[in-house]
Amino acid sequence: MFKISSALVATAVVFGSQAALADAQQDRNMKQLAATSGCVACHSIQTGNSGPDGMAPIGPAWQDVAERYKNDRSAAKALTRTVLEGNNPYMSHWKGKVSGIAMPPNAVAIKETDAKKLVNWILALKN
Image 1 (cartoon, rainbow, N blue to C red):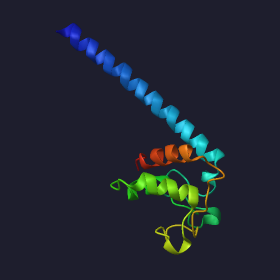
Image 2: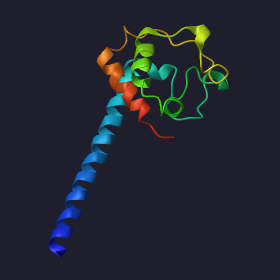
Image 3: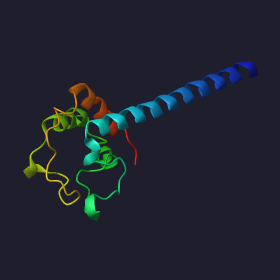
């Protein structure tokens, strides 16, 4: 009985550490994708960062995005469209929280498949 339990614990530790390494690698990959696609010019990952000259940030922090959409099953699809096509400045739902007026279209900067990956990673962030 003890040998079986030890084997199960060892297996769980190995798989758990592999998952942590995969998450760390995914974090690095997504941060690199965001940087090369120009996303970090307006967005930060963590809540509470300020924008240029101490103003409100240009775009919402991704942790805030994840929190706002955590129970919205259609968020990934809608946000991917927003990344690629931009949004209407008159429909801003971050008004008063960011200094940017609208999300510009980014289809020239990021492929749709990469935008989907990045959005799904953003939505999985924890505060």
